[in-house]
Image (cartoon, rainbow, N blue to C red; front, side, top):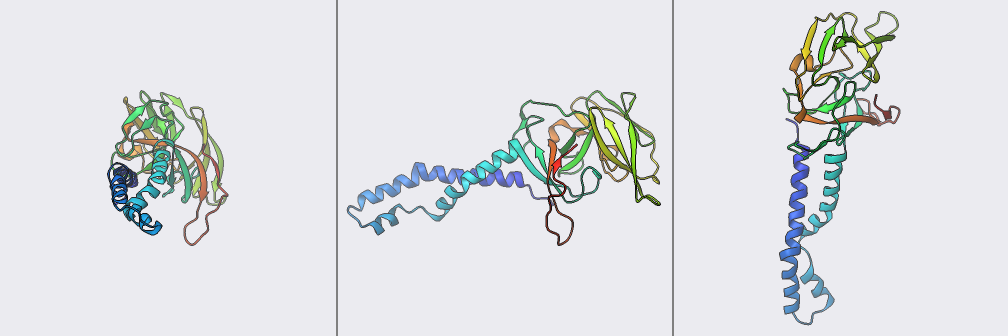
Amino acid sequence: MSINFPLILVLATAVTGLIWLLDILLLKPRRLEKLEGAGDVDEEARNRLLAEPAVVEYSISFFPVLAIVLVIRSFLFEPFQIPTGSMIPTLQVGDFILVNKYTYGLRLPVIGTKVVDINEPQNGEIMVFIPPHQDEYFIKRVVGIPGDRVRYQDKTLYINGEKQNQTFVAQIPPVNPRYLVYREKLGDTEHLIQRNPYRETRVDEWVIPEGHYFMMGDNRDQSSDSRYWGLVSEENIVGRAVAIWLHKKPGLRLPELSRNGWIE
């Protein structure tokens, strides 16, 4: 079961903020009244009468930090770690990326309701979203927007009847290859994809309705995506993946900066 961090962050911010407000409106005036009623007291007694309860002190300390994190994470950028190889070769397992939360419109935290329209996803962009079958973040490439007719045939995409060109780049390993790498042009975006030469695919076609998107992984034969579990609803969009800022290989390895850069 995944931890709902946005909900925890919202609740923590709300609770600490309410405690701070309660102190300003009720608790602090009571402390001042006690001080006035005590008459002339020494500095130690004065400090004791004015001392904030521990829960208030911690709330005042944590609330500004939590509020700033909430605003940045909900409306600007959110970190995300790549858990699987479905986006190889573009994204590797262990990549830490930044997700732009405002490029597709501003949404309320937790409930995800869009309150400000900005841009709509376009073919070729890498998007983080919540799929229809599982309540956790997925990351794939947009290959079909509302109104598109998408066909996948011979491991090649056709969008509205137009073939999306692929150029051979390399085979891995060079002898007896397990994977073939191609450069694909999808709309205005050029990116690398990986194919398994030994896995066959059937011909499939989808028409994308309004408010939905068709997603595919760049590791075309090793990706659980819209071909298997369906379309992504507009209301389940999280944001656009824009940059890799850190990479950590599995095991007891130190994080490294070798893969830092913008995401194609």
